Length: 303
Image (cartoon, rainbow, N blue to C red; front, top):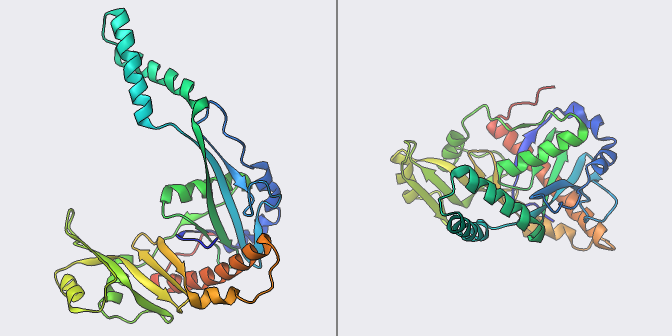
């Protein structure tokens, strides 16, 4: 269940007490099946599975929650094909072209007719909250999806003043400095991937993968004025990831050195396995956030 991406938000650590009755509040906002005339439904589910009773899972100061959803799949190509047939038949019958409003009504009626027969796709978005450091990390690289989860949590709690990360220094400048030879924070080393952009609008973009980054080729791009917008990094030989100037962590991967810690531990059942993995992941994310917070000078959350 290791996360693959991290979109961070900060909240005041003083809010820790607000999560005492978290399960009860999430239960009130449990996912309901999507209705026959609805495009989608959202609500919280147990991290251990939709039908499990526990609505969250806690290890020390780390909380794991899951937002579930059901989306009705109604491809636009199917709608447009059937819509074209219906409009053609109506125009032939009435002997005139349908206006914009009439076409819109026909489309709305068609969608309502097709929705109950559309396939339903289940979706899940996981998030972990660190109550000590006051951050929530959502397992997605989509800002919209992350904000949707935070919004649903805010609705469940009644109040949740979480805001996207804000760096008090230029993330692009910091990443560019690291690849130009400036010292990295303790524990961090360069990976083998980066993206460089010309700072002018519409400028060139260079993407490098499986590439030694401290080399003459990269140096020439920097000398021409390109700046780093994404950079692969490795922390403590435990996790590798790609950090973007948008402060989103992508391609998060837990390396053998840390995963090996799971071997040999006594676990009985899927719950115990997930508990062990989550405890391990929460510790690594706490360390990762702490390193990035200092390097990029994240603004503190307002109390």
